[in-house]
Amino acid sequence: MPASVKAYSPGHISGYFSRITGGRPEDTGSIGAGLVLSDGVTVTVTRSEVTDVLVLADGMANRGSPPIEEALDRLGVTATIVTESALPIGSGFGLSAASLLATIMAANKIFSLSMGISEIAQLAHSIEVECGNGLGDVAAELGGGLVCRTAPGITGVTCRLNVGMEPVAIVSLAPIPTQNVLSTPASMERVAAAYPGRCPRDIEDFFILSRQFAESSGLITEQVNTILSACDNAGILASMTMLGEGVFAIGEDAGAVLSQFGKVYSTMVADEGPKILEVTS
Image 1 (tube, rainbow, N blue to C red):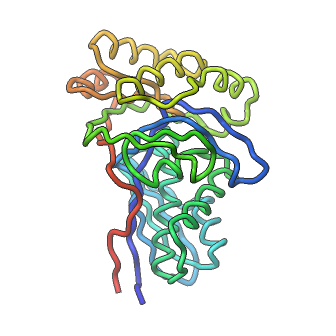
Image 2: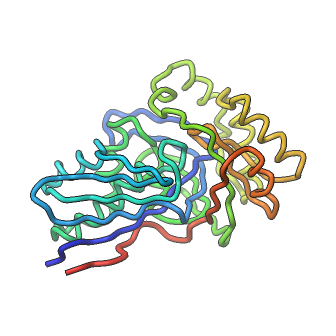
Image 3: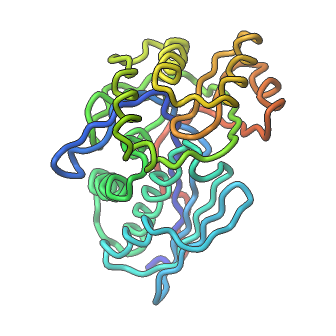
């Protein structure tokens, strides 16, 4: 019987999205397109008599995570959880969904719960919806690549485009609380009207659609606009992270251009979804 299990889930940046509200969490979510990131979340689950969660992200440490604690409560287990990510929380990288996927996958293994990946994903998605976090990240993070979702929920992925191990440079200025945007009718009306209505044909098309969406939705801040203008001047494909006050870009000079505006996070487009990394007896 394992004493601890380590699991991983990739992160995800949405380029554009539109909310879909159903009668149940299973039918609620979002449609849109985004990049699955190789830098996601690694979670270590260890047996314990009480649940304790430590969140390590971008050099910061915090205790507690209501979504993870809710997941363990629904599973009927207690454990010590340590989540680790090189990316900052709340900045549009799908880390909440990644943490849930990796945690539930590891808990399933250590406690022999016999859950399949669909059941794991559904639990993670339901908690994300109920907590007001990312609405499409769970479905996207079940695999790698450039992903397009045309229906809400975990089965809504229409296609995954293999764009190779494409380097992605990101600068993150500040979090944008997802709940604030998702719960504001005026914001959601602008987002819905800006949605391009189709999947991207390739990586360049994805950035073009994402940029058009960011501008039409009214979500671009003054600082983000300044960074995007600098990328335009350098001929770099770039758009705003959804949802976070930041910019993601690809291209040989992307990191150098973004470094003028803050700390640059360098990652890659992931080629796979969540997985078990290590089982310790």
